[in-house]
Image 1 (cartoon, rainbow, N blue to C red):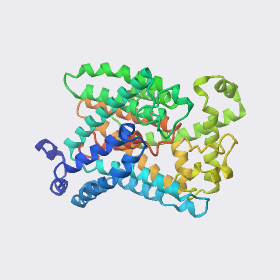
Image 2: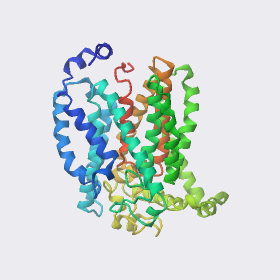
Image 3: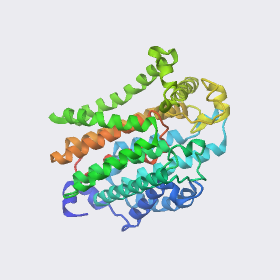
Image 4: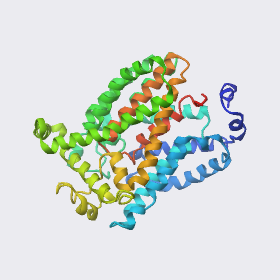
Length: 431
């Protein structure tokens, strides 16, 4: 670490931080590379994950051992994230519900591969954290080039895991799914603006913003459109809100309550749709871009049926899309037999892990929002404050995407939870 970074860090953290050279940083970047560019690494998705991540666990274990007494272990976002992961991945719901061991094994390993990246990023030094942001920005540029080539040249990744006739109508992108890939474009858009604000003389980076917006447009996903619209709405709103520098804790609580308010709003929309108030059902059925809206509303009711049947433990990780569970709790025959996951991330957590997983998830989200707020409050210049507001707007915009898409197994979603701990890591935490 440089002298400037040490000046801001607690002495105990300076002396206890002993990374094994740059080995772990390189291993972490490679792990992110695989997750952000899955179709470039394997003809069968997740093969690279299966072979590489056991090796990454060895590097992570070494890093954690070297930092076993570091102050970062007291970070409430890290602690609540660990508790959330443990309670969600424990197969308690499988004890009282029809279950398939292969499903649990596949999704527990998938969730674990994202979680270890989240944990590992906490144990980088400030310089490595900024280098990681540059690396992820490069991955987003690769995703942008890939989707533009796929769309304009008709390239189709045939062996993909989500594949249907629709693949020929819109590009599936670097994550082999248009909605999840759209999250990468939204992240790339934000990183581009952030790098342009951060780097002196990098005004030319603004020229990359329109291509990222174009990539979001051609993805043809409702969640992506909502994410962009939400981010665009939050930017001026947060700019005005933070003009007088409110305290971080009240602000973090306010943002968390605002996030929670979207669940009842979503349920009200679902009821409006079912009752066909204001002709909402007829309008969505007659609009091509909203062809999946009714299916998503059915999945909302499906998640509530599961939760009310098993409120404390849910039905187990990823068990919601299996046929026996759908037969018991599906809200319509349009769901049964299609093998569809619940498409609203918070409701999926309630259905899969019940209250036991939802409570630490709520704490996890609150401390993440608090960390974003902290970056704004402690910004030393207007440019840094603008960057922090940009990132918080991105995070809130991404929540719109997570309300129409299951993002528990999304690298973009987990990276958004890591982000506030990568930005200006040398600054002091709020007492």
